[in-house]
Length: 147
Length: 386
Image (cartoon, rainbow over all chains, first blue to last red; front, side, top):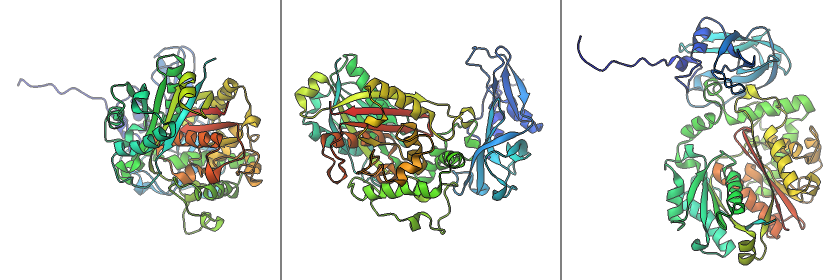
């Protein structure tokens, strides 16, 4: 076998998250695999039971890194939203789009609203679902759809 | 108890595209503060340089700026809390003086936002959010504050017209402020011009402050030095600071800023005063909704009643609680690291009776509300004539 530097494997799965990802490596890289399987997942601390969305690898409350995944299911209430006419570099093709927050009770989810929903059907308090999607550039994300 | 006073204040004009380097920009605010304090470089024991680093090409700007301002070999270092960097700098200066480490400290805030291209700047702004979980959705500062605006409207019936009244007030005073970047009058028709699409619903172009280049400088001294150097020192009476999760999903309040409520509480308690004692205030109006929430978070109005306060013009110069009578960020522009120092300068000039056409009648106690990021860092400072 020829001698040479062995290329170190880098687990940079997180770079597939969102239209443009600004993070490549994270201890919660599995989040991206779950998205590919059609699941939006958060984490729950096995020691104190605190649920986290977005998921965390470490629980600052009890200093435990023993966490388990749970799926974001059911509906959340629309807390607020805003439709952007201007976007950052790299997001021009997506415009216009709306960002929003859903409240699931034990946790909240930040994301985008499905473009197919007409503006007049959006109002604070309506029930919405979080749905995993694959973007045209093969990136993975999720959108909020009507419940 | 030993007090800490402000003995000199200065700021550059806030402009689009400053024709000079960052050290030269910093010099403008410094020169004005030094002439105001009537002291020499050797009287300053330490300097704190405040800005948001993502706009600077220079790595570790404190050293370069201290050199240009003749503040070596005294200690210098850099402080950052984005848009509230120079309020944080003031707090650190206060702490160093109270600890007895130094007697006179220079707090220098600056930002040359035009140091990088507009596109680069937009991209960096977006990264002021949570880059792992929010930026991948294409977030922008106006859209975050817009979500607060929509929540405030849904909860309290606040309207886009109510927010527009805040911009009209800003423009009224911006025209009087020779340091402001935006000095033109603004009308309701312009604000609601159907030809201009909203930046991020429900916020429109005139709901947003503009980027600018600028510097500010505050010279802080121990009670003994303040009395020796200055005829009219302004005293730091209260300091409050707080932080909030960056990620919106981890927040529980969208009709106000928790950091402002908490920092305000701390500052009022330390100063031994309440909202009713404040004679003039500077609040962080990066967006009109931010000023509306500040009224309520600082106790100038009950939650949801900010619209009545502006509707009755109570935050104008002649009103019950004059707010941003220098034009605010909306008119002055918002050179990130320089903004807090500019707000502090305005209140110091007001308390000294030197605010010219913007002067309110005989104020005793003033307040500065300076927010970093989208309610990420909150700083409230209370200043007094005695």
